[in-house]
Amino acid sequence: MTSTKGALTTLMGALAVASVATLIGSATASAGSAPGQPQRIVLLVPGQQPAPGTLSMDIFGDMADELAAEGYTVDTVDVKGLDLYADSRAIQESIESATAGVEVESLSLVAHSYGGLSSRHYLKALGGSERIDDYIAIGTPNTARPAAASNCPDSASMGAR
Image (tube, rainbow, N blue to C red; front, side, top):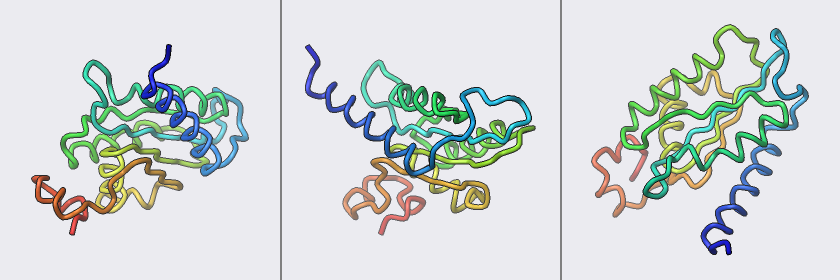
């Protein structure tokens, strides 16, 4: 028997995959595009560890598979969700690696929770807005509440007021 939480997680994952595919467009290339073909690259940026014994990257497994089946080149960025600046640099390094030596048709970031904060910092402070075509944030606290900001040691970097 599937738990309610598990069923909701599955449903949210399916909705997220459908939304992401719609927002960044239908792929024109087949999965595993031939070398030399322009690549439609999607980088998935997870948030913090969702539950003990799991990795935040695990949440994106189904989405990565679905997008790859639609012809996207997909990579999940290994961020820890604890250090905004280190995670932003990890995103930047992943983008450099994913785009090295390939012709890029489009480059998209899909981020969840704290991964969205790190992605936004990359876009705003590290020049990412010049490179990224689509940015999709899922469950990202883009405007923190004052009470939450007082509990974050570096809330100024998150744009909290």
